[in-house]
Image (tube, rainbow, N blue to C red):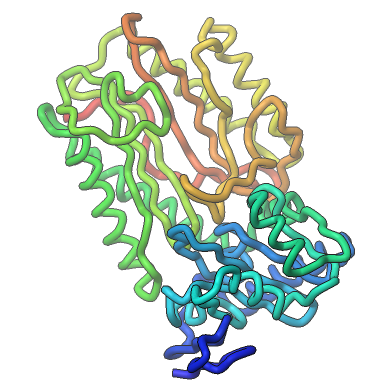
Length: 411
């Protein structure tokens, strides 16, 4: 183990130091992949006229360094200059951040308040132009940035980094393909576990366990964290992100299958409408309508199409069937370094107010959902979800688990 101190030696309680414990671990991507990403970031910095970037979000730190931090109330950073790329981590993590990052790492101590910012200043310098993430840096931390770095100017580069992340490299697409296949594995496990009397939580755990075992099989050198399943039934299907409960399934229940494997910070998803054993006529008609919207939406995903235009097309389908009022959110979003508790590429969402034009290499979902209020025929939430890679002349659907009534009336 190598401990290199800065400012003080360990006996006088260093503000920060380098804890290089053990050997570097295998990262999700090659060193060349991370260097290409950093070259893109440095181009963003040059265009913005900044000498150092101080990135603080989980998604950007993971994207540019491979390190996915666990905050637990502590701040983390990646500082990138023309020559350096250094993650800044808390002492509680010891050598793991260095082992799991591309580039250097500095550990800050909690023996004095704001050693985090002293470590950042050690790399970024004082009085230089600083790029930061305006959608992540809090007001308090922004004030500390000004105090400790005294930047000549500060430039918000969050949107520019998001645009870089929206177009996936071949290596990212390979990982997303694998994640999508893992989501399918979880879906089949959920399907097998559905039965009258089963609890939502038991079905969800079956899907989660199957996915985690599949991730271990495919990625034996990875870290394993954060994969989850939302499996809802009856009234609990009305929202897309409703937590799992202990409700027991009943014959004729509408179900919502949602499997979410996480592989090195990369999230993928499978979402399907299901019914227990049988489906009534009113529910079947609504389900088929949502499937029709799903199929139309996927056909509209292609290079040159704008997010707003795709949204308008699916809106028209629902409006013709007097169902548009039951839609509550957009029809899809980008995939990559994101999760339910961090990260989002808001510039690539299928909504009326997003004008982004699709390009080859983008990865996006199609996931229409309508929710019929309790007390009405067919009450419940209907949603299908597939992941598509935008190609040179169309889009490739990489989700394999079937959708629709023929396969998903189960138990």
